[in-house]
Amino acid sequence: MNVDELVLIGVARKVRGNKGDLKIEAMSDFPDRYNGLLEVFVRKPDAVDPVRMKLEKSEFVKNYAVMKLKGVDSYDDAASFLGSEILVSESERVAPPEGTYFVDSLIGMNVVNAAGERLGNVENVLSNLKQSILLISSVDGKEINIPFVNAFVKKVDETSREITVELIDGLTEDSGRNREHLH
Image 1 (spheres, rainbow, N blue to C red):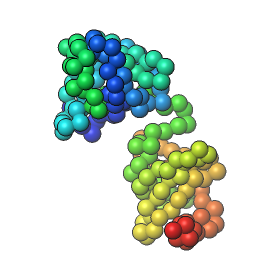
Image 2 (image 1 turned 120 degrees about the horizontal axis):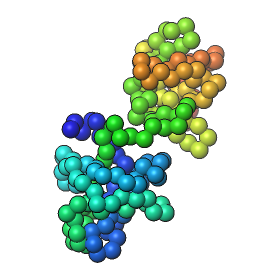
Image 3 (image 1 turned 90 degrees about the vertical axis):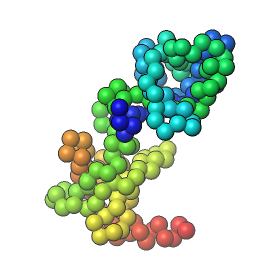
């Protein structure tokens, strides 16, 4: 399997008990996704390629997942997996709720205005407590920062990988100037 087709869902942080269970730091907003997994890909910290491994159990308990890898039956066996990334194939990714998107699915999307004119591509998405900001690398080489809110983002088409935005006067011209004052 191509590594680009895998999605990180956790990192092994602690051994739980002496029978080989691992406590996994959850990297998903969907706790139920850990319940009943049958296999995962595991990439140890010193490895380049992940290895497909069967699971004897997988469940979400309080704020972490617990996984038991098949053939890992002792504390020492489990300890050898600490720091390992736990991944699943893209096809097993939990779909986000309607109207929400994974950050990595937005990065690289083409951004156009309401008239269909190309503005640039999404380079990154910054998040804070109130809203996310799309960082757009514009066609003229400047950076445009667009709040990811309904007032500006009118449509996200994941199939065509295009975001339609409606900008207000001054948003694109002021983006770079305001940023310079923050340094």
